[in-house]
Amino acid sequence: MIIFGASGHSKVVLDIIFANNQTVDVIVDHHPKISELFGIRVTCDDEIDAKEDAIIAIGNNKTRKIISENYALNYVTAFHPNSVISKYAKINSGTVVMANVVINPDAEIGRHCIINTSAVIEHDCKIGDFAHISPHAALAGNVTVGEGSHVGIGASVIQGVTIGKWATIGAGSVIIKDVPDFATVVGNPGRIIKINKNIQNNER
View (cartoon, rainbow, N blue to C red):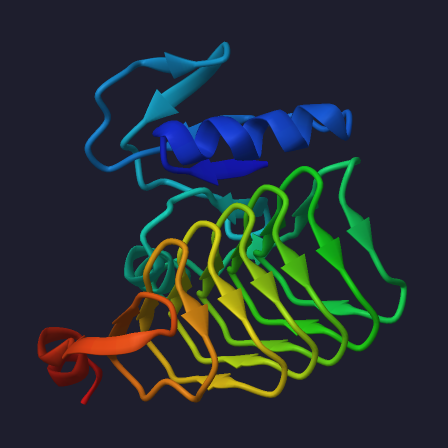
């Protein structure tokens, strides 16, 4: 297996892989600051076997998207043994699920998402590709989160809310109404403080 990224986030992903008695052959980082991590060699070499399993262990949502588009590998999922995932949930390739996460029936998680420690994804939620649901964030039933959006640590989203693509929900925010694409929302109740025009322009 190949892991992309040699930072703090990759430590958590590696811990999940090891907890599942799997092995990692190499860690790829284009700007490595270390030569090994947990005994695994870190390299910037791009000579990668396209048939190998891989996980992009990088916290930045946009970077995960770029790498997934540049490297056509066999992206796999990684679920911590202490996560609780309904057999009726759907989780797509490249997504990682950290310890103590709960994902309930008919939730659908996209590709290359991060469902971080102790997050709760309730029934019928739809999480877009490259999204990040931070530690202790809670999504009530029927919440939709768009591509690339980041729901901050400890945020709460009430049932039926739609969060647009590439939006940012601040830590501890309480979201009681829909959030448009590219918005940054903070507070209780959540309020828009800016529209991220740089991201918006890059998406066009």
